[in-house]
Image (cartoon, rainbow, N blue to C red; front, side, top):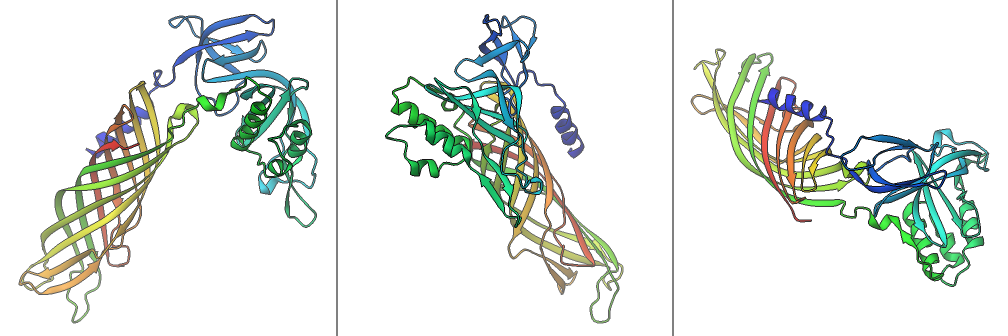
Length: 415
């Protein structure tokens, strides 16, 4: 079963899911000011693009338009990009790469800038990997970068060039914009969008906020009851000592056990790449109870018995990827790192006459898991999850174990 599940997991990952990303109604404008209505492939660019795919009709051939010939493009009610020749500072913000130069290193480039706020004062962003820069202009000025740079002083302390605050204070003259508010300003999208919104409102500008049309429902909380099918094997080896008679080598195999569990899941949808990636953390209760009798030639009566009572709260930390089928349904796959918290769980070993040989306390190592599921209407879900072998006797030298499980999970998202 687990081989089939792994094969299905790999197969889904290798699918070129054309239906995940749709061509949406949009437009572009050539450098010669010719506007073309079309359908643009919305891949929710995490990095500012230099080209995009489009169709003139919904069922026509796909074509590519590039920054070399296009000065503006947009997807209606979603996003807008404009081409601009700007001076940009690409100095690294990595603490290990900081220089002692406070001044930005500005070089001229032609870029597609993403429009965040459009009005009497315009705000733009540019992203390229870890590099994030913001640009602005007004009705009477050209587009320029808002300057922010980290650097080191001669004592190797990290300092910040916050010139962007002076740039904005010199332009944003309005009763609602105060020097104290500018001083508290941060070089991030939410802080700058708020300021540009306040300024355009103050100037009675008929502005447009493109960030307000982006997906806001980025957090899901889900109830997840489940059916677990689990298997446990205990392997013992060691040197017999006087007064402590246990076998030098024996394996205890427990039958597969089916049990019910329950979990609570918190999911954060990453606001990039059309919301196809998510970070997930879950807390799920599980239990395993079993007994077995094992042939044991080193004991006088020839066999030993063992009983396990193992319950815990598993905390999988997962990276999830969605494959959209249509607007109301999607397939997802998970890769998880599972931390296990158990409480007062033991394995007791006895002779056939009932005398106790020993008792081992369960203390487990983390393990990995993979899962495949389906979600409908962002509300209902079903998942099959396989957990790799988990060591639950990590505190013992002469005893080790393999515990794995296959879970069938249903989910209902409260929000």
